[in-house]
Length: 242
Ligand code: 6PG
View 1: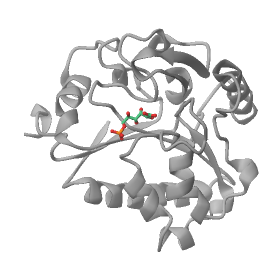
View 2: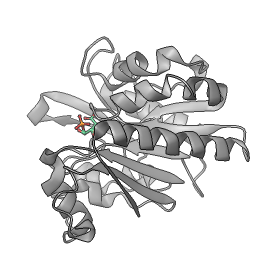
View 3: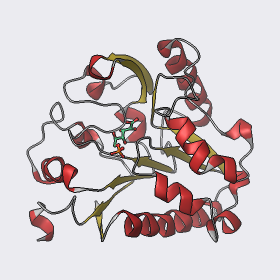
């Protein structure tokens, strides 16, 4: 695991943008597509804004990118809470990715059917062996959840399905989410985590006993690289860096 300690969310977004730009360039020098799963939530927005501007807009060969999502809130796509809407507003509407290479988790059909459809798309891209995504971007909630793997939810332990859905009473909505089984086959996984509100959970996730029902982010152990981009506030309680 590589821990990238950054000054604040601006510095973190810049460092992540540089790293992502380099990873895409390296990978496309060896293969003709780059598959990336985007994260929801608020933290990635600054990063998206950077990637949609100079120099990344010009330097990245966007025609070779294939876009997926880690999870989605089952609300209409014009709803401010919709993760795909956030990504289109902050990045995808500004760069030249062919629409057939952008795989939104549908929220206009039953969540379980949307999850099944998504699984079929993933199976077209990834076989049962080897790496899945070239890069998965993740966030972490104050409660230690990631994707839509919330504390105490059975989906944390899903090993068969690559995508599934469930109802989240606390948020009065269904969630559609990738599972750890497909994310842990990624060549690279990068968490973006900022703010003092996440310092307790981050300490438990990185330095606490293994208890994924309490801190679901602990189930993310990719066969490839694991990166944590964190700011000073989020890292404030980590003994490993202080
Ligand atoms: C979601 C996300 C979720 C998110 C965390 C962090 O749809 O809610 O995918 O896992 O990454 O909740 O969200 P913030 O970046 O807003 O703190």
